[in-house]
Image 1: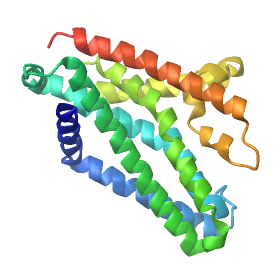
Image 2 (image 1 turned 90 degrees about the horizontal axis):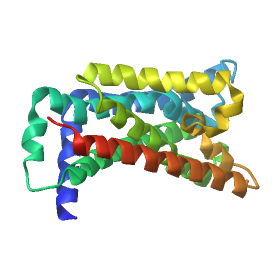
Image 3 (image 1 turned 45 degrees about the vertical axis):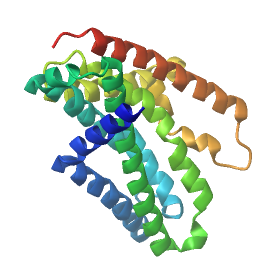
Image 4 (image 1 turned 180 degrees about the horizontal axis):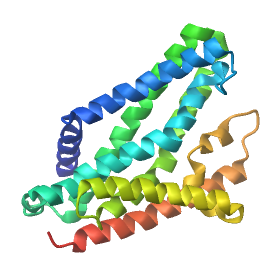
Length: 245
């Protein structure tokens, strides 16, 4: 366990040592502030609901911004190390490949959680400034952000799986984003399969909002997301385990 903790810490520091990941956190924070400002001054005319801005920003983040950030992180922690040859030094250490894989996976997940926290704080504070504390349900907003990490898990493992078949980091980002977009497009074009696609539930937090939460629907979606997570974990970790560097 100590090896895993040390590995996760190293991988997180590796990500944050790159300026682009610090800038991305600043960017996602600015989006929350800007969206609150535009929603206030436009009085909802541009489609922004100023009285529920944190959840509006959350929908934008989980649907578009976070998948891009995940693709970039997967490229840097997996494919880029293959390009530079540093992965060879890592796998020769007295630690299993599975443990190495898990540390990198957890590092990406922690970065996503950090991005969600930044988004939550900036959008919530901005909403309070522009609309007052009475216009916001703090508990409901926190719950929405907390449970939004669940649909990000299969998306993270999807990007990691793509990284295992790419030769360079740029192709990993492009193929991950393109693949994500194709899956979303297919689910829209063919509504009959929409309920079976993991990308359809980036906004599943909406199921928890309201007087009565549809328990059966929540359990069904949760089971589906867990199934995708386990399948993609098995595929990506097996590929990482068997890959020759």
